Image (spheres, one colour):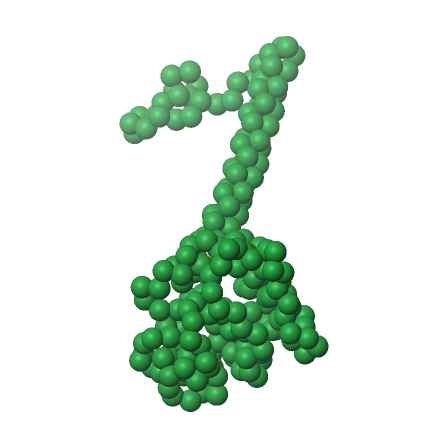
Length: 212
């Protein structure tokens, strides 16, 4: 078949040329070398795609976790407690806040965005938030119907923000009001609850670490 016939057919489509078939050894070696080079280049490109694709996904996942609300709002504390039991967590951490609370906004925008604190709370607790001033419907830890404001009042939450830690029976075991603590002190408190320190002694903050 002629070169023209090998490269074209008569139906209007172009046919891929056949691989060269060199007659001498030198041309054959060059041909093999080119094929190996393209194969290696393809493998390298594939490996780089996997590497940077995985790294990008990991970075995106980390970024999303840090920027997601640490204390998402809830209307069902019984469900949060059930989630904690099912996941093998230590309990539920409730942030009591309200609309227009400057100190609440300060804590959420700075302190509660600390990666180490977020990791501790997400790993060992189910963190949620309630609006202490709203009459919105709420299902309490026992499954009873109440409101967020009534529940906050029953829990003696009078300063905002306040974080209360509840054990797996829905019993408050530690609480801390205010937004002036540094992340390191909140981290100590979370670990104190995680390790059951409240069963032996009250939590002792480090006075020197408290912001003035």
